[in-house]
Length: 288
Image (cartoon, rainbow, N blue to C red; front, side, top):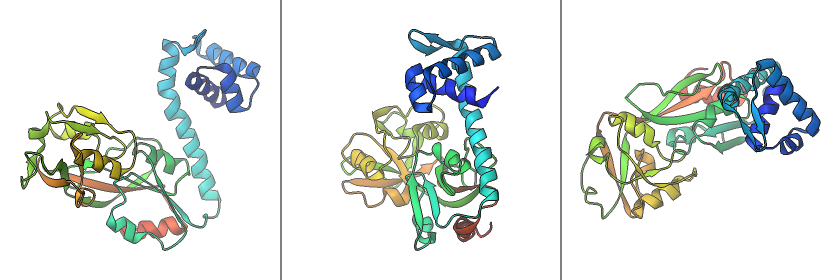
């Protein structure tokens, strides 16, 4: 199917308006209507109701495919342009909030670096589409196990670092004096749901047997300091790499002893990084 028509459809569905989509895309409203009609004719099914503007059942199913398809097309274009062009001066590094550990910080060039803090799932897409030269992602894993990342394009990942994980507790918490904790013992505790700042609760459930870890408060941000302040104030527990959990005022970092899991950081790049990106890959993983 024509990707131009598909982009128009996704924009109309996202904005719930033909006129707003026309303004966003720089088309006339008539052109947007023609794009949608052509796509519906091609697929043989209505994709949108008109009043109100909303996806039909077939349209919802198409949206599930459209995002990955369009992202893959953007990634292909960026990959070819990247190969054909001279490497840009400087380096743009997309990072998850807790992925930029001390070792990665020490490896950064002295000048010419832009660090962009993104949600974890957005980092592979940023590297694939060329809005970032490299990415640093992190997550909970068994020692030496690779992370499971979205399949958005042919990307290469390298393990960069692994460190212990700790539960952050207020100093007055009954378990704050423990020398270690089992995740399963905390499944019914009050937790902070901060998928873009701390380690996501879904990863805790997977490590702790697939149940529990209900959120008491949701934090939709990327500032780890806000997350640790909320935890120290008693709004919920959070799991963090040891380096991020240590030294938080009003809180205690207690290591997780069971199951045997670590905070793993991986470098995400295209197949053949060049320039400053290649040099950073070499420093962090010893090869390009």
